[in-house]
Every structure is written in C-alpha cells, then in structure tokens.
Length: 237
Image (cartoon, rainbow, N blue to C red):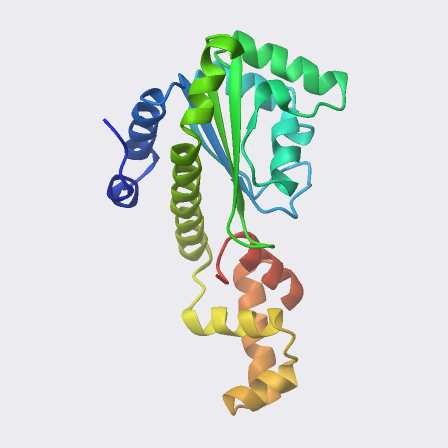
C-alpha cells in the first residue's frame, strides 16, 4: 500500500500515522524509519523542540537517548545545513562517537541508511527522515536512489503533519488567542510597543498589559522570550 497525501492529512495521531508510513517506506526498500523535527536554533541539552515519529525497534531509540547521541548525531548535523538526501555510506563523520553511533545503529536494523533532510524556510522547523535497512549498502543503496523523489515528498508531508501537531499542542497547552499571536508576529517583525499601539489604535499601556498576559501564559519574563517560544512551536507561521 502506497501512502497518499490524504492518508497523512487524515491521520488523527501518531498511532494512526506510524503504521501508514512504515508500510509506505517498506514498499520502497526500507525496513525501518525514524522522523525527527526540530527548530534549527535548538542546541540545548534538553532538545525541547525535538519531536520523533518512531517506526523502528524501540531498543534503538532507548540507546540513542541513553547515550545522548542527539547531541552529536551526524545525520542531524548534516540536515541542519543540507537539503539533499545522503546515503549513510557517504555521510560525513567527524568523531569516533559518531562512528560508534552508526555501528550500534547497524545492529538495530540500520545496517544501511538513507538520510532525507527537509526544510520549509530559512528559520522554520526542519525535519530529518532516517530510513534503515538490514541489507548491505551494495544491495539496498540503488533502491534508495531510485526512490529518492518519493522519500523527499514523504519527508515534506511528515514535516507539515508534525508542525501542525506541534502547533496544536502548543495552543492547547498555552491558551494563546489569535490576537495574542498577532502581537507576537508584530514583535518578531521589529515593532515596538509604541508601534503596535499605533497600528492597533490602542494605548501603549494596553499593549504592555497584553504583553504581560502573554508572558504569564508562557511562563517567561520578557516578550522576546515569548516570541522565541512561539517561533519554536510553529505558532507564527
């Protein structure tokens, strides 16, 4: 069964989406997949903007997290600054830790891998589709190359699905209203409180009160921190 755009858009949650994606990638030569989305500015130890769709052995993901490989993952490093898919055999490796990560990945179904980055804008959330096979690179890499257009389209659809899920989760968690998001967009665009007051034909005091309410909802001290939160959770798209 091939995955259609409608299948993705209609998936209510990860439990519905993951089996669809797994069947789709298997028809194009892969055995496993992991899809990661993140905000490109997130280099924190907590990686709070990261979201995962896991279609592989859970033991691999447990090891990945336990070893904190997300801090030095060569696939993520490549995806931050590249948009072209890359075979695992051609992936640039800088450290022995990165080499060790790929050795362990091979033991859990990623003997061969294909990395598909996806970007929607210069500063927005990015995605990385990891595809794995238990076959050798000599056996499977031609299939990965042949399916490149499909995998790129799939990665883009997954990024849009994931971004929408992140946005909805953030809205439900914070209770931000449309007018508050409009204020944050204006701040992001460089408007001061005085500029916003003039734009909306209200007083500066009113704008500062609105800033305060936004900050309280997001548990931050400054409106610039609120803008950063909104950017990282795709609320200003």
